[in-house]
Length: 132
Image 1 (cartoon, rainbow, N blue to C red):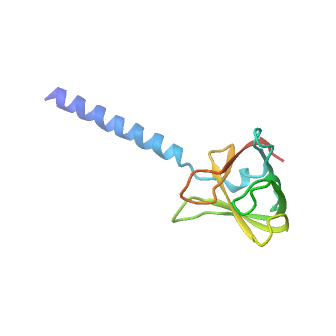
Image 2 (cartoon, rainbow, N blue to C red; image 1 turned 135 degrees about the vertical axis):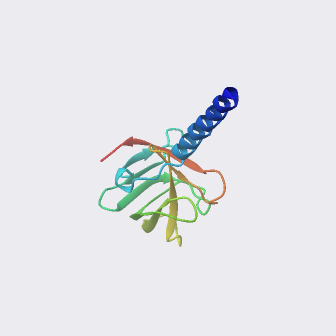
Image 3 (cartoon, one colour; image 1 turned 45 degrees about the vertical axis):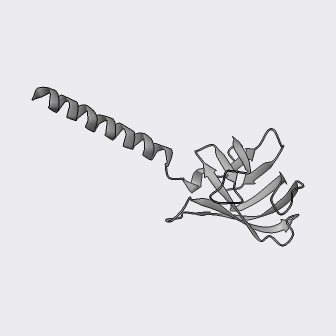
């Protein structure tokens, strides 16, 4: 009987540890920690999320503009209850043409991703370089 209890305890401990690790992967995003400069070294793409709610993006390629463009505007964190949290970029100026908004997805604590298909893989990953 002792072996069954010991085995059961190990199973409960393993499941608890698994739950902690899984929830750690989907940690909530703290919008106050988002401001900073993010860069992709391979492409030279860069985005600055300023703490005043403005942003500027440099050398970003999108589905609508395969050639790298610069654009700027305002950003706002969206805490989504039904899908991934994201940063809404309201484009006010730049080379995106008629595109008024773009979504940027936080990835962990040190990166953001452009995903032009929200369910697809990232099309561009930028890693934090500095915080303002």
